[in-house]
Length: 327
Image 1 (cartoon, one colour):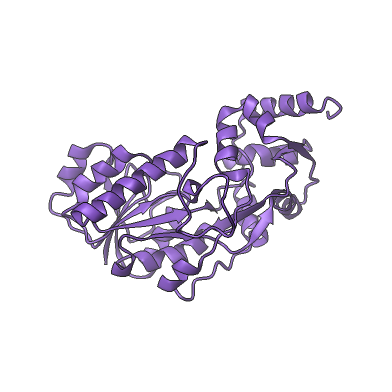
Image 2 (image 1 turned 45 degrees about the horizontal axis):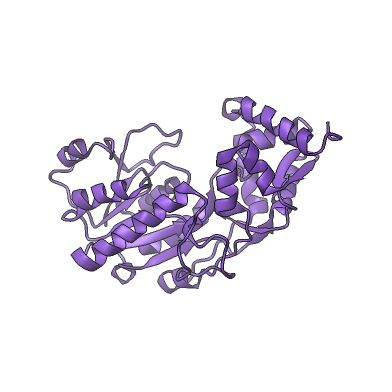
């Protein structure tokens, strides 16, 4: 297959790019080459900005693809642009949506692909819903060959799940309290990008998936307290937690509040039976206890240790304001 990834060097897409090359696909990456992650050997990189429609039209004038995947579309305008660019250039267009688009708070667990899409709290999720609605309309009205994929919280070696990534981990290293929302006992699903890729590869070029949506996640569910403990234990650090109400966090940091109210504040467990109709042997095999070791290894290098000092100070203030006895 001849495949075009728009992006292709992100947290999730890098593992998918690598697996495509391993499978022998002809992989093209259209991006601006700004990521810290490098394109895999064997991929053909097209340097262009997908937001510059004329430039992309020019560089792809003579190209046609079996599959086009957009990893970096976030609003309806982005996918409208893709529709106009690729309607006659691909046999399948895969839109990378988000599992955060599912109804919040969750209606029932586990979450299935036919769960209603509704998120009144987070503009990111609302944008993804708008994209899905537009693309499904184009599928029905224009026979645009779209498949929708909804990753949940997927990580690679550069990503901790606690807020602002390395900043919270650095607080552990400094023997400071880390903030966990609520009582820390809501369930959460973390998926390693390499596991995600094993399911995603089955969507490529599969005509049975046209007009359908699939999420691809691990079957492992952990509480946020367990997640924090796994990180600390793997790093050999003492864990100190400050549990703060979601409403309290949102008063101090609007984006953090939207992230919680729009996604992470609720127990989230997924039914992966639909992706297994496409990839029968799909199974996420990397437990978080094992996957986090690679993350800790990445952050053992000083050049990767970026601390948001402003947020770190705000966290100190939040913890003190909620409980002045904590130092």
